[in-house]
Length: 146
Image (cartoon, one colour):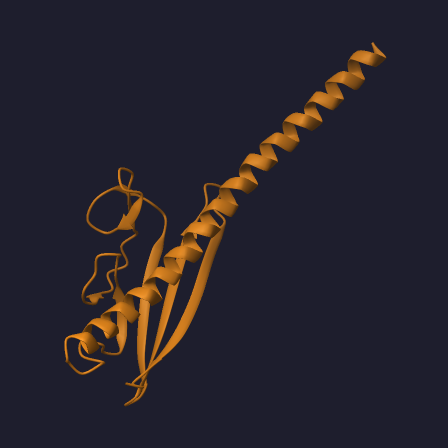
């Protein structure tokens, strides 16, 4: 009887540890995705600025202070609507047009600091299955150095 109690106690401990491990793995995965989505947001703004320069337009053409949403294929800034991102399972890409709903919400905020500087903030927030709220807030400054 004592041995059975010890074995059951050990098995319950292992099951609890396994369950907690799976839960933490899901949190870490969502933090990884959220961080990369925030970094991608800043990178998309950089790509728009680079495209302007390569095409001989003013470096900040189309870059106006405000809140926007962009995805990997964006060639311009779209007004922020508060939509969550969709995951296209076939390609593994997050976007707004095709895919399964996610809890990831990305907002790009642009501010003109001066005539030669733009502040870009990429804010991503999400909620986990157990209702915990997470967010990542990245920013970068872009300058007219060319």
